[in-house]
Image (cartoon, rainbow, N blue to C red; front, side, top):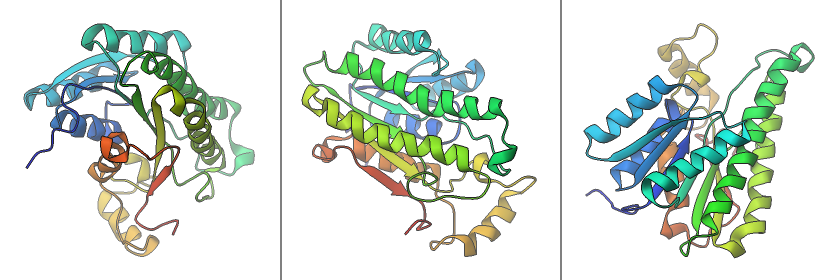
Length: 255
């Protein structure tokens, strides 16, 4: 039986054109939410909207660069103008630039990761909190971090791990600052997930599956739907007393 935990609630998801972001958006829509899906590319966002609407849901696509403060403010304003509130936000947009030792990473790749993965979450949190604290019902925010960060490290991912560690710490600090405003903030830290980001250079999905049999205790990558389930739990009323946590979903990799 389908749950209706988010009926008549407005949910904003960044990076919603593919992968985890799209899975999260579809999961919220399946439980009655009105979706605002954001990203830099209009085509993938329109595809996400079409999937939601085909299933009977409501969705709005908004192109935005989360590293741009004006874009983020306009995104939140669009959500409220279109649906009347902002009840849940999932800050999922992120990029990985790496694969080589830190000394070989370009300054451009460093700044790109820092701008989207850290500044993007900071700017989104500011705009979302400022809206949610004006609402009688407040709101819930879930940031997507990573096991690469405070939980684990990997060769070739030092800069990425630094940005995601920042997301974990930013989440907890913001949670303490704003729970008194009625805004509940948490994070999910995925491990390897069934997306292109977990594929090695030139690796097929079958080759990844073989590699993961021995790489993690569970023997497989997580499905995007499994990450979405964790996000929906943290955003739901069932997690009303969960504040500032970082929920790891990584097939046991960092256990």
